Amino acid sequence: MCSMQRTNTIKQTAAACYAERYAECHDLLKRIAKRLDEHKRHQSDEPANWGYSGDLGHVSQELAYVLAALGDRSAVDAKGLDY
Image (cartoon, one colour):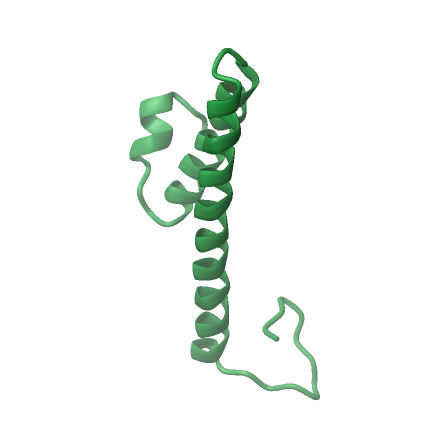
């Protein structure tokens, strides 16, 4: 597995490390989509519960930071977030 620390026993190319991390990010995005759908189903059971909206406010802020880290500041700028 690719790590931030270098070791003498494992040599890995930048391209191989990138491929591992890309696959990990893709997996995380699929898992996020699944959990978002589950969250929506729970919210539909309690439509008056503001907690679900609060959850998504936090999640959308975090996702805006992720998007900015990938070179697109539009969401953090639109939300007025510091980045």
